[in-house]
Length: 367
Ligand code: SF4
Ligand code: SF4
Image (cartoon, rainbow, N blue to C red; front, top):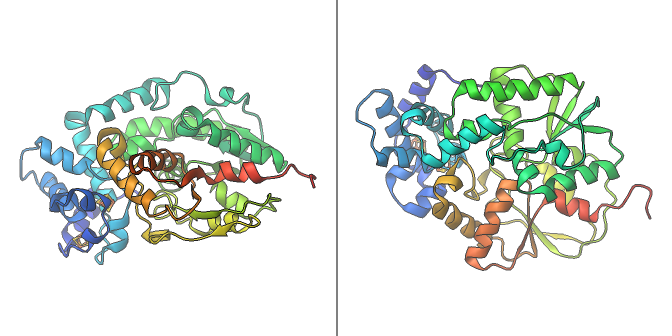
C-alpha cells in the first residue's frame, strides 16, 4: 500500500537509532560506515524532508547505495518501513540529482519500453503472439533480452505440461523505475499498458519467472489499478503440479531472491519443486527464507555501484560453495551471483529453478 508523506514521516521518527539493522545490511557489511545502514539513510531522508541541509554527492550516493533488500525491515524492532522511505527519498532526488546510469535506464524505458534499449517485441523473440487464454506468461525484460534461457524454459515447461497459455503485449513492469526513484506518472503509463493488454486477453492467472516483475505486480500495481487476475510466481504454479522429473543425483541449495522472499513472501514453493527431484540432495545455506542475505543485484545497485554489488554477490556464492548447484528463482539474482562466482572463483554451478525444472521435466506421457 502506497504511504503518504505523513505516515512516512512518522516512520522516520520511530527509528530509535538502536542499530539492530547493522547486523543484517549487506552494504554496511561491505562499507562499514554508519551512514550506509538503514538508520543512517533514515536520518538523511528526514533531513531532506525537513530541508535541514543542502544535497551533495555524498548524500545522493548514500541513499542510492542500498539494494532495497528489506532485511533491515525484518530486523527492525520499531517496524520502520526503510525501503519505502528510501524510495521516497530517491523520487525526491531523481530529477535534479539522479545517477547518470539510472537516468539512462529511465530514458530507455521511456523510449523502448525496456531498460536495455532493445527494439524487438519480446513475444516475437520466442515466436509467440498474444491470444485469448486463461493463463498468461509475463516474460519480463531481463528474461526476454538478457536471460532468454529462462524465458524459453518457462515456455517449454508450460508446453510440456499442456497448459494453454499466452504471452502478452508487454512493456517493462515498472519495477526498475520504482526502485531508482522514477516518476510515478511514467510508472503509471507502463502499468496501464500492461494491464490493458492483460485484460484484453481474458487472463485469469498471470505467471512470472522474474521475482522483480512479480513483486511489482503483486505489491505495487494495486496502488495504481485494481488487479482483475491472480499474479503467481511460476514456482507457486509449478509447486502444485505433478512434475515427472528425471533423476538428478547432485547436492542442491537455494538462494531466496529478496523480491520473491521478503517482499512477496514466497519461500516454500521453490523448495517444494526441489523436493520433487528424484535422487537430489537438498541442503540449505546458513541464511535462508526471510533471513536470506541479498545477492546485491537489486535496487539499482548493480547499475551504479557494480563493485559493491559484485562483492556482496561473491560473499553469497561463497556461502553456497558446498553444493553442486545453487538454484534461485530470479534472473537478476542469477546474473549477479554469476559475477560473484567468477570474482570468488567458486565451483558451484548457478541456475534458475525453471532452467533445471525444464532440463529434468519429461514430456507428458513419456516413460
Ligand atoms: S533497526 Fe529500525 S529502529 Fe533500529 S536503527 Fe535500524 S531502522 Fe532504526
Ligand atoms: S534495504 Fe537492505 S541494503 Fe538497504 S538499508 Fe536495508 S538492509 Fe541495507
